[in-house]
Image (cartoon, rainbow over all chains, first blue to last red; front, side, top):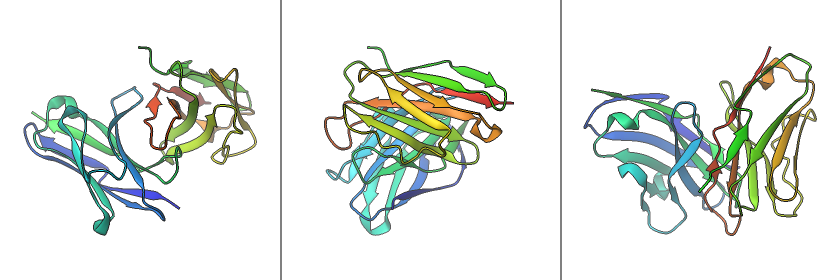
Length: 112
Length: 115
């Protein structure tokens, strides 16, 4: 069975500061891992995905994530937060071709 | 190009009524998914369609929920005899279905409120 744990339901950062969102997964097979972002009243948008190629994955909007098998982690980072990064972020894992299991989400607020 | 569209965007219904939620996937996408997003349960997988294969219904919470996909395109999620716990945002996604880990593109969702 697969599952995802996102540490911290809310994260507040200052504009220009590092954004770090934590995600740990459990999977019985080598997983596929994803980060999605959801802006208010919108659907989910893919930020990046890990599919067993490079362990450091670069995504859109300056985000990146590193797959660490030894730590079963896939933390999301962005060096410098922008006001437009305020949103809810979801980590997801898939062991198959399709069924995604999502974490509970982390809401990011950016302080001016 | 056009993304995944869903209708209605909002639906308010009375307990016990049936509702139908519609999803129009991206043209050419053979795979279609329904998820539910609720405060208590987070994001949950409901059902998956891929081409002409039998759908994976393993995430449907009860037999009051059903879904169909006509002509390999539009999908309808039907909830019969709605209950208050059905209140949630229902998200539809589609993908090319060509390979594992292909990206799922999500629609804006339908917010269902059961009074």
